[in-house]
Length: 245
Image 1 (cartoon, rainbow, N blue to C red):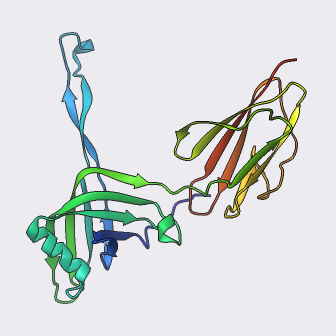
Image 2 (cartoon, helix red, strand yellow):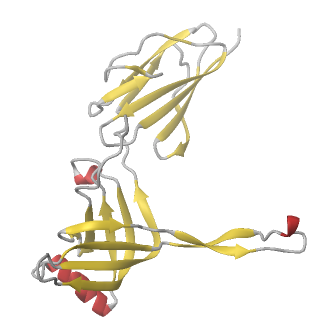
Image 3 (cartoon, helix red, strand yellow):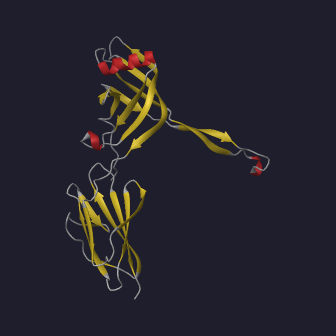
């Protein structure tokens, strides 16, 4: 089944002082439409007379918005004053990926109002549209499931848990050194806020030990996944070495 969802509930917000203000009654938000320059590096040795390119500077592009024009709205009137003054402001597009706004995925960027227009038809709603030119890099913040509050491996560990630099924001890697006599181990992960925890793709209740896991001589990997609705999985890779006899 697809995990696709509609965009209903997406917010465009501008930082006003220390608070985020939602621009009201926006119907459509497009972008950021990032792009990069093409730098031609064609030379006399270019194969088969084809031009060669490398990527140049990145452009954050624009965010285009449209919606109902509400003349009494401070959030929309602020767009007008920003356009007139050439103000560069902090914005964010908050996606409807979770109930709590602090747990949502969002685009954050700095921009100024490049263009602004209005319509007032005789028999339909008044509208406003604007193009926000991004200055610098737009950043997509991804929300991950909560960290484990405890992680215990029994039956295989003779040295403390050793963290290894993470390969990604959601992945933690740990190394364990066992002894040859330990042919099995169990893993007890704890995270009270998790919707589910999996050890090697088998669900384990928070604070309870997994089933016994066989350990071969040499390298073994055990993967623990923490799952919360509306968030990306938090992953722990446990690398256990069982020495030869």
